Image 1 (cartoon, rainbow, N blue to C red):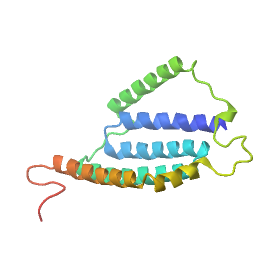
Image 2 (cartoon, rainbow, N blue to C red; image 1 turned 90 degrees about the vertical axis):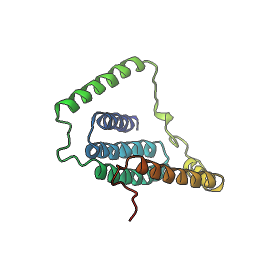
Image 3 (cartoon, rainbow, N blue to C red; image 1 turned 120 degrees about the vertical axis):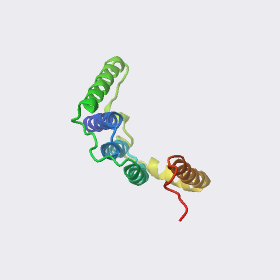
Image 4 (tube, rainbow, N blue to C red; image 1 turned 45 degrees about the horizontal axis):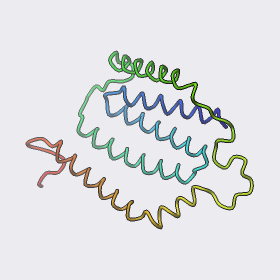
Length: 173
């Protein structure tokens, strides 16, 4: 159980490095989709199946919107890929930085096989992620609605800020 989680975490770090090193929104969005899949897999391996499902739906839905707007705004006919020299330099420097951080933090990290959720608990009456779902909908409904409105307001503010003098995302018809 520990080996797949470590592989998913390694994939999450590599995907994050691909996002950070890539100036093109096309390939950075592909890296974010990969990071969402790896993060969802880690939460699934820890026993939070509903949280994994919500994470993938919300994160990939948000990424679809962000990708549509960034690809519309960045009309780049020849986007830089991971094979470009500048992107490759950034990728190697980020990988070296992550490796150095792993060397410094390796001694304090410890994991055992019983650290995962629901491993070794044979007689549970309910799952932890289902209790969180009930709490989220009973008490946190207003918070979810306010966060949704805040995200919508942020989207409109960003669209107004990036518009040009003659054209923009929100223009009079």
